[in-house]
Length: 306
Image 1: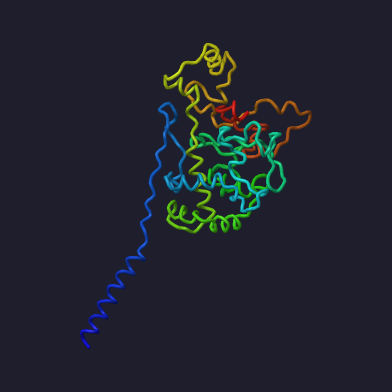
Image 2 (image 1 turned 45 degrees about the vertical axis):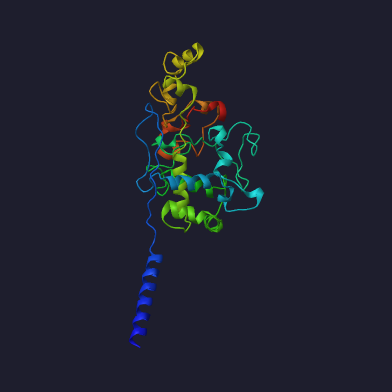
């Protein structure tokens, strides 16, 4: 009898050990993502401490960026992804000859037209001066809950002139799709889909969208020469005596071709009455000097994006 009891105790002990081992959670150890940044680019990058770049986070963000179901819908006519308006082959811009918007005017899933043309998503890892044309998404902006790239992702999902989505519906749909829970587990240590982690993953992916291999870059690296006309254009671009482009779009030492700052280029003079646009920089700063001022977008890939 004692032998039988001892045997039962041993079996239960072994089962307990096996059960405790099987229940032990796997350590959350994402792999840091290494950016390939040319040595002539700025060294200061904008990566928040609570959302570092990881291989797993970027991979999840890439899947979400191109997935039309991020809108929370599954019907073919109701699909919209980040890539609908930010096409990779067009420099992550709306692009020329967009099949979805052939007239160059995007329309949100609710039928609302955006107030302004969407900005390209390249090289945003160097942007410290707010997002959107007026820089409203920034720590100094009007809504302190919308301050960084992660918040721009959220706005893209819910804005009526974009995906016009419902965050609860989006979370439930992504949670139900095979493969996504495992990707979230690898990226964030939990297989539960949250809007916060959706925003973080897409933001991680967008921060890796670095444009650095144009002919100009190859010239900077000593791999290719500019033509006489191109060199003349470069001089015009970077001098006050020339075309004076560099004040808004960066000089010889700025490969981003933008300062990420805000300027009034005089287009408000076309209006006979008072210039009024609730999306200009003035409505963020209340500085009269910012009436009609907007972010100077990058000129990189301009031949693709128009």
